[in-house]
Length: 233
Image (cartoon, rainbow, N blue to C red; front, top):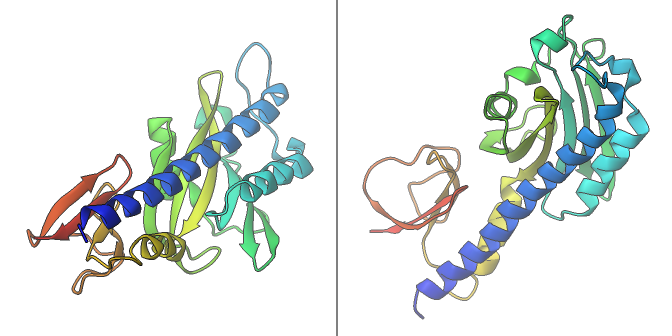
């Protein structure tokens, strides 16, 4: 069988997965923006008291996001506004992750979890600095699942000011399932990386998930804005 046929099947599955997850984080960010805007001054950007966040509505939005995306293992809202709008450096994390058949809620702030510093995590920092969607990983998620994970994050910007991030998680094992389904008819060797060449999936010996792809043993088979596929040379 022509190897381009299974390769195209892999590309189609990955394109659907990555774009769907990007759209999910953006939609959650849009819902959070709409929810938070009335909490602000109508004339100038201002600080928001964490206690004023409508917890039930936030959790409802997160549940909607998870229900609409079979790829996601978790989703949430991370609040940490820009310093001029956040004099006390307040932060809060509303997160729901899928646990068997039900979603398990996780709500953290300075009082409940003083040592968590999510606003230094790359998925938060890169989204804050770029003010646009950012796909991070693979990395080991030590907070929720201790598994290799990827995160799609979208900024929450109101009146040109950054207030936080909406994000969804995708387990690397879930991405692996999609790739293996596409390769069932013809198990060609491929190495899948993110856009900085960190390996997401490999069925080629010598290339491990989480490593940075190095050397010239592989040829670029497909370039996407969010991932790359390499083939044996």
